Image (cartoon, rainbow, N blue to C red; front, side):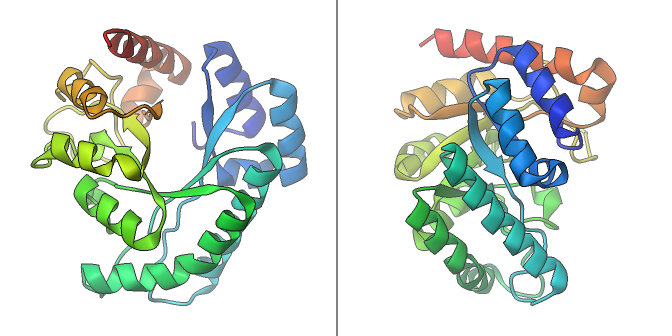
Length: 256
């Protein structure tokens, strides 16, 4: 859905009858910020978060990097106008820096956005990403995302698709309750090397039943989110795949 025009996205999400939705900053910008505001209000949908990724190295000042920071700032302003509580970011790649240096560099880059979000009452979150996606982030484990979030003074979007095999994951979920704001689910088939290429939860090889139990047992009471995209989802049909994914999530959460 990330590549969809905003009107098509809103129409599809309305048909799916979801409680709340996440929308990408590029979709909002592409439609025009004021026009997007009107379209969302007219749709009646509740937007829970905006995704505004940074994909340039924090250590390098570049026109692309400045443009992405401005887009993130506009996303924060948009969220404040519509009462959207969360803006999620990726860190951008580490480039030539070691992990600790990259975090320090990202903290400097993030500071104006964090101050803006704090002034407007918006929660910023950073997201752990798949290790194959070192082009968009240097946070690949939930443990590191939690540690980074505490250092930065922000929250975490915990993508279990990207960290399901992480050691002591259940303990990290429990320990990270102070910063975890969103938990994302998608499925994976062993041997898949192409990214992004996710499956509807329950169709792949991940131990998602156990992962959901771990999340609930940790005491997490925040937002549960489906994130599925890629060739497999496109082949099935995006709307049908999301409908099945939402049914799966409802079944899992109804187990208590």
